[in-house]
Image 1 (tube, one colour):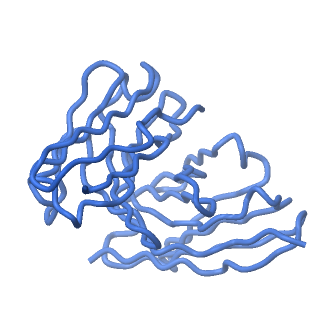
Image 2: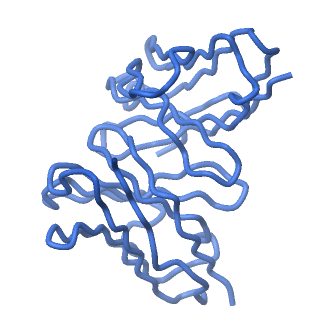
Length: 116
Length: 110
């Protein structure tokens, strides 16, 4: 079955950088779009970024545009999220999710805390 | 992109039916049949319950159903059970090729 396993979360100071990874298995990685979605403590879900199945197009929420970069490595079946210029309001659980027109399968998430 | 509007809370007794609404615009919910509904229990990852407005993934109970009219999508839970108590979110593809989630609804089983 589909497995998405996030890693790379942790505590980082404001202005710092972090790279999240998502190891995928159980499906043909190169055939599906992938998302990052986040959830701040006690808050709702917020869509962050999407990359098409072939990496040809990438889309971002306005709140992260210019600071975050989504990418994928088909040889490693892995999705990435490079996060720069981090702010306190970026503190969230970050989920990796699979889907093209919708968001269908989810990982368990990794916590990112931005704090001095 | 503004979040889709959902009621903050909905409650019902065991066995009853409840409906959660998800209101957007013609640029998202009303313009595409790519609305999903998710169930999230505390401390857990979301789980898709409905995709493409009204389709149920295998393994999801047929007590869950989805529909759409204009700019509003709806999730109906029939025969409410204690295990249905959770947060529910909708999502939609948008005209900008981005995605947007709803504000979330807490379902309480009385």
